[in-house]
Image 1 (cartoon, chains in turn brown, blue):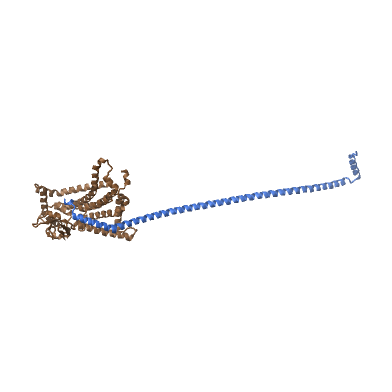
Image 2 (cartoon, chains in turn purple, blue):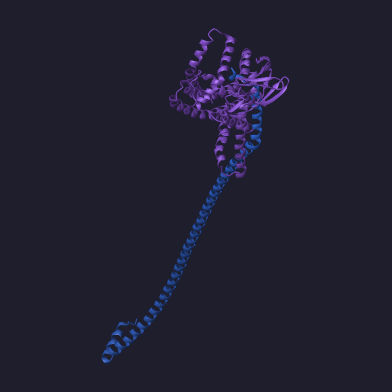
Length: 394
Length: 164
């Protein structure tokens, strides 16, 4: 296990350094400009200024990219803010962009202090307009719903009290992947019902090795006898992550969202593993935490370390998946952005093959990260299932 | 920092989605699929075991056959040996009794030959005596044809007889 982790972490380091390099190259100009512009501002002021600056440019930038992509390159040229573009792509959103100026306006659901508000995100007109709801007036800022007060200023206190339960791009994408997963596996299950113990065929024969792989390589070695109880969870997690990873790599409609690269999603997944671990912890497992096999005077040190250890495992799960997928997206986007930074189609001859190359690697990463998340979940659950008999040689 | 700040909405919907997906897939996909896989593996196991059993049975049968065959062979050999022995003993018996019979016959023959021989000898003796007497008579008749010779003979014999 440790070997696998080391190998993958080496890969991660490699990938992130590559990403860092590309990102650095890409951002040098933009950052330099920012630095000179806000040289004297500090702290909150600096951030506020930057936010305002970005706010004013983002809409134009987005339009520029769209136009550049379809060949209407205008001479009225603003500098190209790469980080803004990339962040916009990997972040969640209230619109699901289809093509050109067409997007799906996803529903906005707000839980405010005065009640629930529901309206289409189309009302925001891509952040250009404010929407006057029943309780407040809302405006999108950086794809976040903010409450406006009478004079058009943002009321930060009121904005903080409004909880955004909107069906965002990630939620919608997640639901699409759920539908895909259900369709795929219901059909596979029906094939099993139809064929009984006969040889698998079609989709069934594609997915059966993977299901058996999850069972024989992930569940059984880590969970032992009781593996069957956790198979549904491990299979769901594995295919959910894999499907969303792959959908995230598809640059157009059914994909394009960065679901597994969003920390909220990985948080929920890691939390699920954490809760299962906690609920299935045996007496032996807890005794390792609260009565470790160390001299008594080390207890004040060891018990906190063990307790922290309980949380670092799911935390690492959360960060690993989030960082890997986000890094992949950023890398691909950075390579694409090179074309717009240099404003030359010639760069495409270099960056497009690179994008293809990285995308292929990302296909692998999509599988590997699903596998790692699942195998580590199984490992943690397996540790919680430890039997007292094994305690003898500890 | 937006990137690493989980938004409440997405946490909420992820939880709901994941739970729904988990229950749907567990009920309608994973349970039937894993059960079917298990069933198939069990049936393969069973088939392999049955094949192994059949193989063992076959081996046992072959071994039994071999044993029976060996037994039959041994029995046949024993019977042959018995027959041979019996033959030999019968022959020996026959030889022995034949020899006895022969000896007896020879002895009988010898005894009768002896008897015949004695009878023949006796006969011969009688004949010889008769012939001798006959011849002596003939010789005497011839010799005693004249009177002088008769007188000479008588005288001679008379001389040899001493009258004391």
